[in-house]
Image (tube, rainbow, N blue to C red; front, side):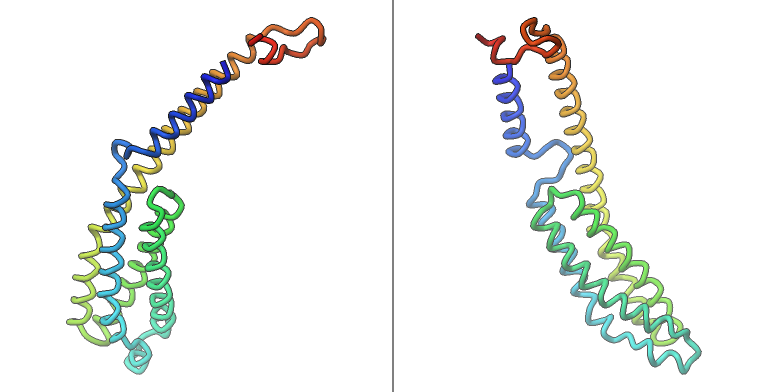
Length: 193
């Protein structure tokens, strides 16, 4: 009985590891998407280097733009690191979530800084930044769908594990008590003899 359960669990884990699950993108697609996203982020960097919020203060801009710019620069570096982690470990939900939240953080900062660029520096540069942000939205959406698919897969796996655990508990509860041991149940080994 226990051999069949362990065999079932071993085979299930092997099958899950070998074939891509329906609905979850294959690892190579996720790697390609994350590589593309990293390239889009790197394409943004030269334009971000042209943003000079410290010069806007003399035009009446709040000093917050300078702090946002520093946060944006570090956020971009963290985002690049996160995309590399997702490319290496696409099956990890926590890594994918981290990358997605970092994308949102960078987008929020970039949108704020972009409005400052439009008002205090160059409307043309602001428009270029807007186009580059729009380009990365496809990769962001693919990552979001990957996260949803991973979460769904994990829920299904947990459901199967819970059902199997309940089945095993039910089997164990049907083993009659061993009269020689008082209230203790018979060991599985004594049943197999």
